[in-house]
Image (cartoon, rainbow, N blue to C red; front, side, top):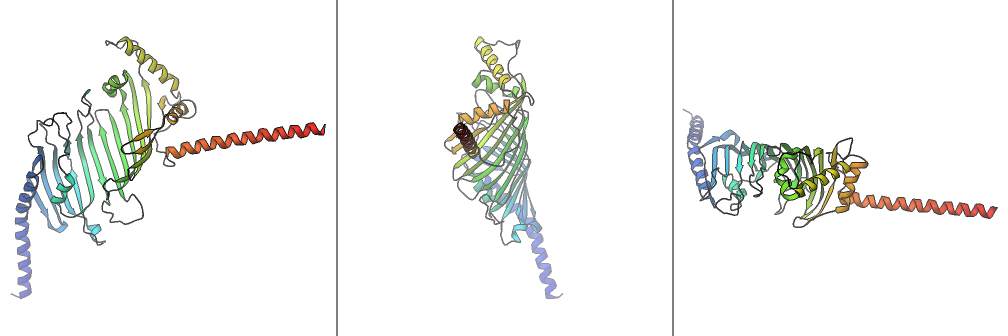
Length: 384
């Protein structure tokens, strides 16, 4: 047998042996990594190696809090794929991509440490780095679930998200450009607790301790009756029917932010003469006044009450503009209806400043016109 053939066969045998033994060693390494978490412990059932892709798949990840009273695990992932991102390798960058299939995260918030499960005790980015010790450039979630029940303890509020999809690309800025937000992010999901949907897209700079971003967020078709637990507690009213859309644009750079929130209610009804419950006199009056305000400010064509709330300041201190908010309500009701589309032009502050500048210019023009007319009348009187 030729030497070259023997070498080839030796390499093939080594690859076969490596393929057979690698899953065992990787499984042992992964389970040891998850067992050493701070405040949590984890386990996986199986690991598959795909040599030609430079990848491995982890099956049935289960991470639970140690000494906790939460029945559900903190993280469950039926399958996670960790691999080399080949298109970046062709550009001379050795980076990875991670795909999570049908993950479920269960948060619990409580004053009791044993009944709380937030994951703040552990640096999860470091955990992923330990599982795949090369920089991650792309991260995806498919058909995920995020349970955020009991975020507001009184009343209990279901902020869970189902069918959650997420993609974060170009995390390591492999595709170099001059954009200050080089990493595109998209996300979407259903909000079963409120009967609506969420869509989110952004461009971010993730290579900073506090990431910079420019995002668009939209919540559609939230059922107002499903907000009654909150509205009763904080506003003293409940809704009989209607939906809510919420649109937001925001830019955050070096901790400073600027943007707006645009809430739009459709077919909203607050007051009902005979609700069939034990409504107090105070609540009766509040709901009657709220319904009156609703009818007064409602855009009759679109059957909606809406405004645009400017947001400015820093992450620690966000300020809103009262007068622009009130003007937005009146504009929607009596001038032209706001829409659930993004403005995609000027910031709220810039738009408001330009609006005031435009009003000043109009007043100056009218003042000049009146002055010219006075001069013309004086000239006519002199001719007489």
